[in-house]
Length: 304
Image (cartoon, rainbow, N blue to C red; front, top):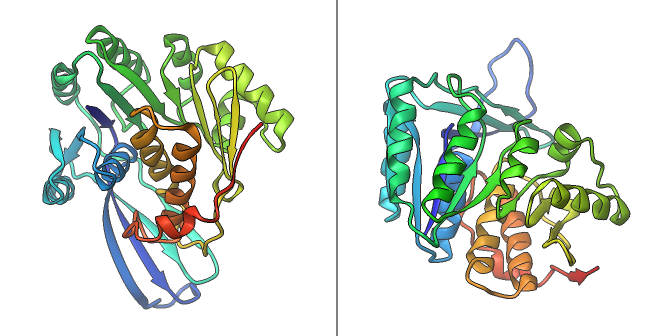
């Protein structure tokens, strides 16, 4: 079973409009609402590829109930930890020329909610995987990551990390099975640039030395890299018209895991990850995931 844990869930409101003008009423052309949170997105994509998945996370208020209800409609198993304050709403505006991202910090979390999460980790069994994704809401310190990882490992589970917190550097000492940084996170957390292949090799070597067993590096329109510590692969990115980049990395991770954790060929897993990420980048939220097979034809895989 692939469990996902999202400590800072959200609803994404994707607004499409003409050119934004200050000090006047800007009329929208359409608005789309999507259940969100990085781990939630991973589970939605896993479910699309018919992989068993279980969502754990923090939810609150009418917005939290909306996310849980939408996941249940898709027959996804959800174990929510509840808080009173409403789950955040993030706003993404596309005016035809530019994309604007307005991301909220999230509802404050109390000790009772944190205890709920700890109790819910009892579901992890030997051979399971736990994907920990996304930011920390107010009230949860970075030490909580290490506590969750230790509990997962005690139960025989493997951990996959997709977080942008500076604590990621220290968490690598716990030898996670896989991490999924992007280029911005490598620069901010590890002071590593990945603008060419030699720099990517250096970055991968550094991450493995720090403790990561496998690394999936996402670079948006510049493609994907994967390293298992001995070999390095590159997947090109299909060309799409950008609508919103908000969920593309999450979708790429979900698609990759749907193949890689089942022992499929690395090239197939990377190609599916690249095509799925591109499909989502050309959509509001996760979209319909209906162009993946078409976009797969554009992906090139190279073992470097």
